[in-house]
Figure 1 (tube, rainbow, N blue to C red):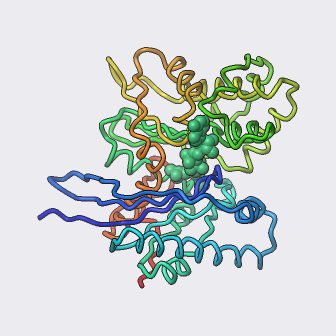
Figure 2: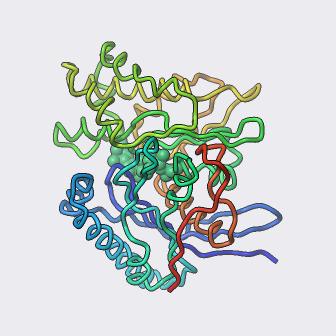
Length: 357
Ligand SMILES: Nc1ncnc2c1ncn2[C@@H]1O[C@H](COP(=O)(O)OP(=O)(O)OP(=O)(O)O)[C@@H](O)[C@H]1O
Ligand SMILES: CC(=O)N[C@H]1[C@@H]2OC[C@@H](O2)[C@@H](O)[C@@H]1O[C@H](C)C(=O)O
């Protein structure tokens, strides 16, 4: 008999663009997982919430705990409204939360939005806190999406996500490998914000600029890019390296945007091995897939042996929420949802705390 699960996946991305909600169904059929995205929305955050989440890293201990509860309550209320609005009865909610600290070298990765408050306000069971067990087992606690890439998007040779940070995942000699390749929208948005835009729509400003070779060299310089995986990036590293180089450059905003797109594309080229003869299929998701100039640069850097494919907008925008819903299903079933081949943890593990309602 087929088994299926109705799950709400929640993702609060590093770009602070809002809370992605995806109501999904997963069916296990003939040894394969099939996904369907049934209903979606992105709730943009109020300026007050954006400021709180952005400033949380310097908040007092007490303020951080209060924000953890308040954000859990906020997500719970939003899920409750979403469920009423669509007249649905999901089995549970799976929530990533919002990353405040990510310093794997210090064994720290903190996602805010407490699962207990989320469960109490959504009035549904919740799976949350997906990263801590992997961190405790010596892993990076990131990226977690690759097991979903392997089980739901296995027809692609590579899955690239262009979010606040860009990452790639692929299978090599029977093992899933994945890592963050560079900062992405976090840099592009900071530059767009400096000229009063939320983001560089379709990369038009970047397209109008010219390459700033010194900036490109500075962006590509950090040792991280040559480090072997497992590796992952946090906001802390990006501020200290990429954003610092951007600030120190005298180039115009358009030239900086142009150059950052080249940097992102070059680091992706460096990260993608040729796995076999013939054409390679590359899935591009995350909001950066709506940046036409960036997508063109990536295709150009990778060359004609790689087909860069941008899927339906729903998959571009909600793939991470979909996969966190799926990680929740694996957790619910007591099956591995985190791969040590990706994170470097001492073993594959089953991450996530469950709050039953
Ligand atoms: N039309 C567009 N043109 C250019 N960029 C766009 C467009 N639409 C969205 N974006 C970019 O995508 C971002 C949102 O992407 P996404 O939701 O994947 O980020 P995220 O979830 O914060 O990322 P992460 O995976 O790092 O957590 C926006 O902030 C913007 O930079
Ligand atoms: C600690 C953290 O929140 N990391 C995010 C971030 O955003 C993109 C990249 O950096 C990735 O490593 C990760 O998210 C995705 C969802 C992951 O874990 O696969």
